[in-house]
Amino acid sequence: NAGVTQTPKFQVLKTGQSMTLQCAQDMNHEYMSWYRQDPGMGLRLIHYSVGAGITDQGEVPNGYNVSRSTTEDFPLRLLSAAPSQTSVYFCASRTTGEGANVLTFGAGSRLTVL
Amino acid sequence: AQSVTQLDSQVPVFEEAPVELRCNYSSSVSVYLFWYVQYPNQGLQLLLKYLSGSTLVKGINGFEAEFNKSQTSFHLRKPSVHISDTAEYFCAVSATKHAGNMLTFGGGTRLMVKP
Image (cartoon, rainbow over all chains, first blue to last red; front, top):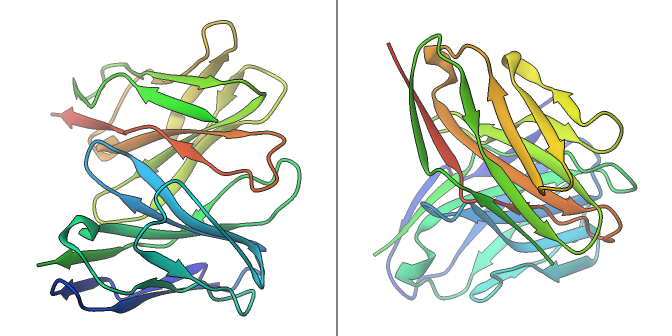
């Protein structure tokens, strides 16, 4: 059981370049989300999805796009990377419903924007 | 909306000493509370959670936390730490009735266990 798989683990971009961080889960979880982790700020929610075809913004959505065409996949797109997007990105998933709040995290993707 | 404050960004402690990592939250609605641990270069793992019932919650690796509703706190404790407990610890909260049940994280506390 692979859990939540993120690729790539590391990426270096130049300002203005675009890229997609991939996230896949094999647990049939309805809920998927993307967080960014910055020193001293904990994890901040970027976007989330409660099921295929449904996405919504989190706390820091600007500069990022998401889509959810299947239950398994939830890619995060940076259309024009900026140095402020240098961060570690985590994808996380869980089941939905009352009390089902335990997130399963991927190992993270470290992005550097020069 | 809710917020989480972890009062200490770093906590140095000697091996076999007790430790307490402090967490306070703010919310206008009922909440669920969590502690996650992040070992170096890894993702986050659930340490323990409070959903309802007993306010003293036991987790993995000998950790426990106590939910104090009047003080809006959820402090994490361990009576005797090991070198392997060196990691970053995150307190998190979610509203019980929110459709998305979004987790809000604190800024993290880095626990440094010294020999």
